[in-house]
Length: 315
Image 1 (tube, rainbow, N blue to C red):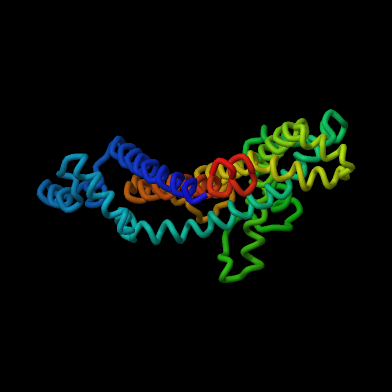
Image 2: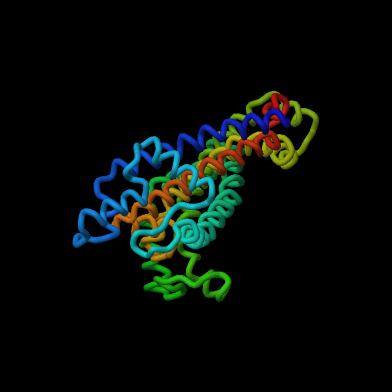
């Protein structure tokens, strides 16, 4: 097991280096001069050149990457061009809002989707299976922004049960904070339940066809015992991989939901920074999201042997 963990950790290092290189290269391809944006159109040539030199933009790209990488390793992602705030604290503050929504949505989606997928597989081709499959297909087909707007219209405008816009932090007022995140979380849960249910159903069908399941039934184990003790651990392993992918995708694609519900999260920070051409913030958010995605998938890989005996045996 120690060797398996060490291999996964070592493989993560070149992945993170490639991620950093890709983020650095993408930002350098964007047109525009950060020094000009910081000083404005009225700045003279000497002042612009001095700022470019101070920012290290007069060096070769390789030297710039090494300089930037060293600062990133030290926890310094630079200063925002528009607000002059350090980028890393800015990202961490906004990430707290995003994480509150995404983590709750993924946990709830998993708790709903895995049993639904297993029940559908257990009753394969029955009316219950067709109903669950139709529901999951419908949820997968709906655009997240459209579903969010419909929920806002129904629960915010017509019924007036929940606030339409705004945000209050959990530390400031827990109950009000929950009222603002219910609809964004519900939107993400409905969308992701469709994806995870289909995966859980397919994985369960595969496991139900294996010999040891038939053997357990022949020994007189109840259907509930077969599903919980023999099918769930093995069917959950491939679903766990998808949960990791879903979590990473939500972190990267949360901008739409945060824009619809006017939440001050990481996605909106990214969108605002793009419109303002605030390159340090855009670069920092991209690197933060990509790194989080890699680390989430690393955590899934490390947890995999706990659910799949074959991987545990190889580890």
